[in-house]
Every structure is written in C-alpha cells, then in structure tokens.
Length: 204
Image (cartoon, rainbow, N blue to C red; front, side, top):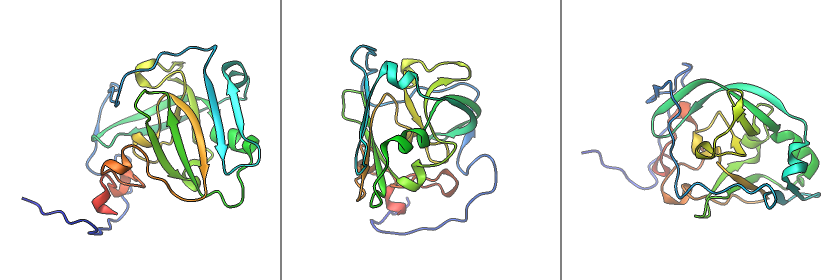
C-alpha cells in the first residue's frame, strides 16, 4: 500500500503527448458536479468582476450577451481521468472582461464563484486565467451549454484540469493573495496541470 506524506514534493517531466498521463479518451461528455444544478433566471442573473481592479463590473444577461464573442477549439481534461478532444467553445474572451475591469498592478490571483447552492469556488493564478484562448463560454459544439454542463455560462481554462473551469459562473474575484477554492481546501492540487498529473495537494 503506498504511503503518502503531507508535504512530500514530487516533480514530473511535462508530457508532450496530446493525451495527458493517466487520462483516457471519451467520446461523450460526462456530467460531474457537486450540489444541484441551479435554475437560470435571465431577469436576475448577474456576472460580477470585483476585488483588485479599478473598474468593477456587474453585468446583467443583456449586457453580457452584447459583449464581443469568439470561438476556440480545445481539448478538455477532467481530474477523474477522462479527456475529450476537439471541444468547440463559444463565448466571451476572459481578456475582454479583464480589459474592462482593469486589474490593479498588485492583482495576482483569481477566485471564480458559482451559482450552485454550495458556494463553489476555484482559484487560479491570474497568469493562468488571463490567456488568449480562455473564455467565459455560452456554447459548446455549436449549441448553448446545457445546465448540467454549466450553462448558461461557465469558465473554460483548458490547460488545467476541468474543475478549474467553474460551471454556472457568477463572479470573478481578483485577489492580491492566493485563496484556495472548494476542492483545493479538500485535498486537490492548487495548480492542476494535467500534463504534470497535479491531481492532489500532497503533490505540491
């Protein structure tokens, strides 16, 4: 039986394969989440961007829907070992929102918040979030994202394990210091790079 010790640090070489180590390819799109699927009401829905920024945002559904959109095709990797290739995402660029919110010079981290009933959050370095290919997605493979998969709006941060791509996004909090999210305080890795198999916190 393997013995795991708190604080034990391991370092793997980054894989150059398209399929990260320990992953299996699936054709469908598994549904995994904590808590219940929230009900979407466009009359009350808001997406907030706040914290360490100069121009906080509170966008209603009409204002969010009026933002410029783009599409990107990316692979998607879940920490539960499944991967799905060539996901076509559509939505609003993360960089579009950050450009409007104007992060302060001391902003270094992001905490994403969800409409899920359990207070789901997940944390990222701002450098991981503020990437050209990342988006706040409304569409997947040409159709609106279903509620079970995080619709109407979810984050997509494809280069990290999928729990960092928060479903049912309600807010983007800019932080000067890191703050672990829902799964990160429950034993999951703070960074979550699939190619380094950063699954659990004992690997940090």
